[in-house]
Length: 154
Image (cartoon, rainbow, N blue to C red; front, side, top):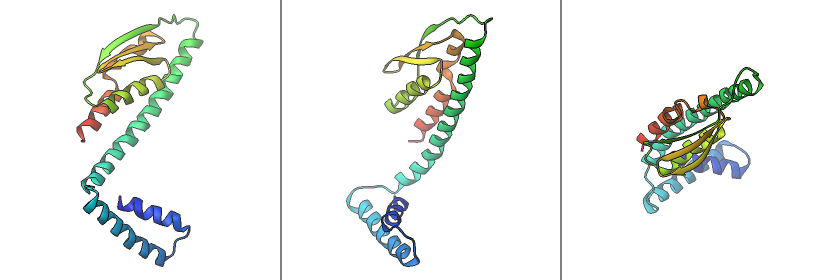
């Protein structure tokens, strides 16, 4: 949070000199102290944020990788004259505990080409897959395992 205050100070000043930076450090420290003292902010939140930020960036990288892989798989299915596409609707449950993690899983499934999350109720998902091969292992995908790690960090 202190770094955020300092960054905002530098951006609002529009230039960076040692005087502006020194004064910004003092002002940012005072605002950070005020926030912790009177607004109930806990400095441990910053530590947890940086731990989670690394995991979230890793999740985003894997999501992009899976989207690219699925794009090529769907292109292969569509352009292959030997491949018979068999659409499927799959129901599965997950052990994710938090609502944001469940929603992120549903959105990740939908963002991946060839699959669409049709329904999410509590811990049960209904997913339409372009082909039944895309449904294999959907309930234990890399997305689920990474979201479990994020949930355990809290």
